[in-house]
Length: 189
Image 1: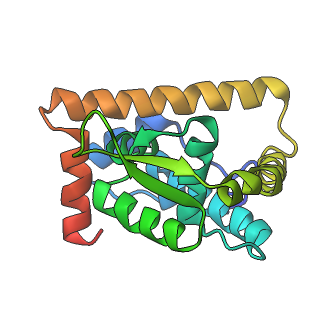
Image 2: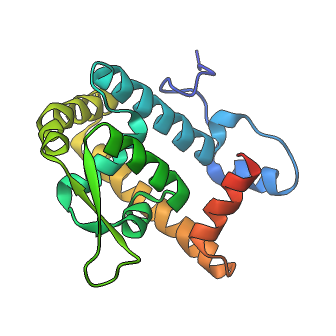
Image 3: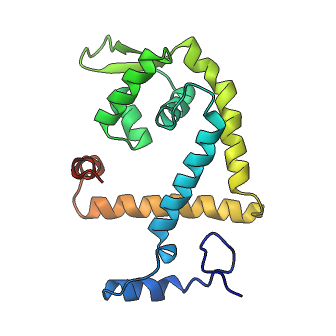
């Protein structure tokens, strides 16, 4: 029996060319046949699984992404942090304010350009790395359960290509990706 649940193997997905050809002609198609929907659903499932693991900490999922970048490199500008996370700058400012109040980061004016703020972790923010990275590893292990190593590698490669394709599509349409994100936020989407 073929399941209609997209999260179950063998759910009877039609070939992508057929689905999108019909969609371009105006036909509706089930959400589970949409790459965009599946990526969004996977992302939300990741967030739920990770949030469950970090619920006893003071870190929200919004903070997690900033911490993840700052554990790799401190002293970067708010703008660079926003770009690396692909987050709008006003959202970044709000998150950093909360992280400052919780004693996880500090912002300092750049001595070479006073208009720029550089973001640094506090000792407390650095210490969370040892507590939270294992949570992320557990989440990833749960997500890839039952997948072969070659499937995991292929998935990673395909997702990177999808991101590059969409970035290229935005650029080819003459739009600035950050401006597109700002417009999405303004619409409340």
